[in-house]
Length: 187
Image (cartoon, rainbow, N blue to C red; front, top):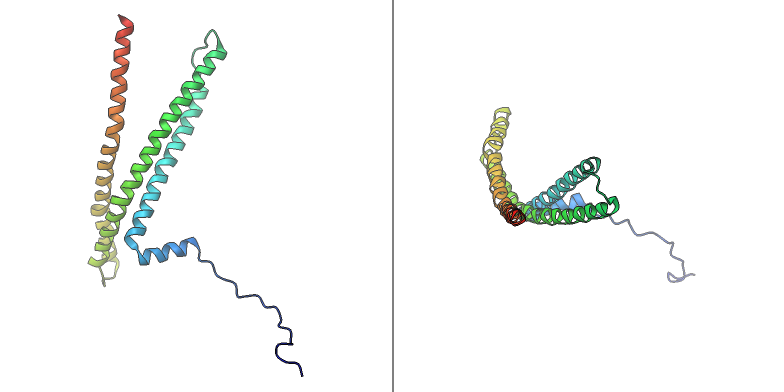
């Protein structure tokens, strides 16, 4: 009689492992760490939004600037090289500013927008807990639109003022330098 060790074991595949999707991991994270997850999400989306807006505007302005060429110079090849150098420097400067703004937007999303939304909507849900009906839904919608949204917009306006102050000061400095240089050329 064959023993158990002598009989061949048929090959069976292990049961397929179900890899959780990114969305299910996100939902799990929302349940286990809601504030942190919302803050990270807000930071990521705010930064991406800023970078995407920069690239769209940069693409549109680049197309417009290439379609409107300036006066031809005596040496077109040299003028083209100078224009290309100036354009590259300007693009690099704009990219640095866009990257800085994206970082600031991410910080705003992480420290202000994410927690503010978390606590405001948590308060709204707790306030209307156990109540149902069309009237309750309309009240929630009204509070969200007339109280919570203005709070977010006030935070964004404050953030814009703080972020843009650095760039306004930079531009004012450039204007002062241009005035000094133009006065030097006149004398």
